[in-house]
Length: 125
View 1 (cartoon, helix red, strand yellow):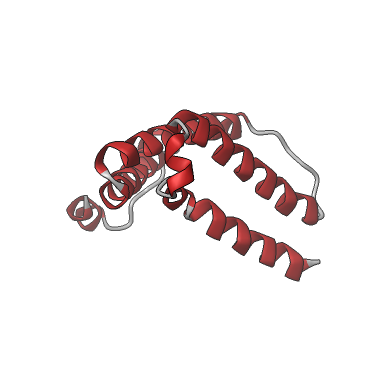
View 2 (cartoon, one colour; view 1 turned 90 degrees about the vertical axis):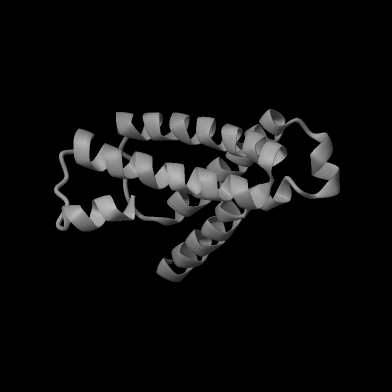
């Protein structure tokens, strides 16, 4: 069972990490970015559910997970609009950089995480 879980996690990561490139396929260009976003999010839910179904645990609902899913859906919708506007390479750089910034700010200010080397973290920004 652990091997299947790892394989499904890797497959999910590959599929979830390459969703933006599919919007460049000729047939997909005809689809509005928000419709494409809906199908992307639906695929992520299915692949994640398959992974969770193989893990022998009980499911625990966290309100943060609901917020995370909402923010992810908004971010992917905007990612597809960015791809349509500025292209895949620039769009992916912008949304990945934004994700890092939001994650850092959330961890430090909301979750009260400490930064081991604050000058290095600030220099990286």
